[in-house]
Image 1 (cartoon, rainbow, N blue to C red):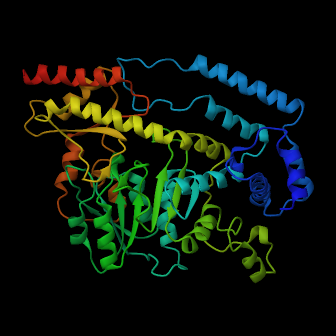
Image 2: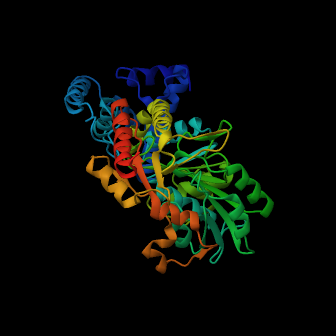
Image 3: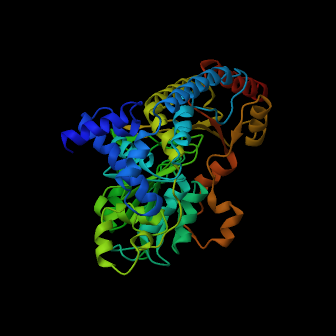
Length: 489
């Protein structure tokens, strides 16, 4: 960028507040050039064409003068509204989820509306870069949910252009205790889900059972990190390498979790994250696919996210040269879906990502305190444990009612609900017992006794970012009251 063009852009851009996606830590010339490129990306994603200089200039001039005054007034009103909206939590109640956003996310979302660019564009690209830096990962591709992220992983692995791609009838091993859309994408690409048992201490997939389940048709292992607790992913990686298998990670509940300082989502060939409302951070709805090999996966995932066309691919221009007789705006080179997020999702996510370290710190501290206070009740309950060197980022509290307890899981759960402490099953519990499985071809290895224990004896309680100390005490007091009344201790 020339000095003159940088000055011209500065006049256009910096008469208003600098956009977050421009990268405030960059030198001015690089920051301006990045915003200029983001504007061009927006137009290319919109209709597949490069914008004219006049179109970009028009967008960069938006928000000056009277419009900027109105925007500031809207921001101030949002701040006032947020102060009125958010009230202290009821200390004698514990919901499964509570809003974690404030006026910052509201303003970011409203700014998308005011900027008049709602569909996937520069904010999505910026959020992808920021997420990649957070992990770190060579690349990230945002989609509209964690379930879609899992579907994208399996679809990419099954694409015929990928060497050693998955084929119909190939087997993918996963834990019996997982979420439904950890399993369904395996079947949706024509492969066979193979369910293995979990470890009852960690609630995660058991590597020994994985190795025992491998057959000549096995092609991949799905590592699911349950409730913020990293599975023994290094052992799974060793198995995958030894048997020449793909390793993919479902990290939808485990943002920021790590093994010996290395974050989950960086071990497998591909990984998936969810930004649903109740997770460690939220974009309201949204997800991310990450991978270790940018050259192999990024362009494929970019196309699959949006219909299979070439918009946004690094090799876009090469495809245009190869196919001169096809309008490049409608040039399709892979199979695909429409799994695109919106600019609002990305703007929300950018703010939340900046807050997530604090969110995780609070979740971890809450879990540590509550688990210490619940230690006297280990005679009646099993609690989830993490392996040495693993950082558990505390998605929720899991209780397994012991077989010799003088009460049932149903009685315990009903009592908590009567105390306005919301409960739910532990993830999808034993997926092999879900009625839908009679329609899904699959294979079960062994009797899954630990998955059954979780299914019949397990209950989960929330551990969102905003659980107060008073609510923690109320939870422990409620458990204590129930146990004393039932066990007469």
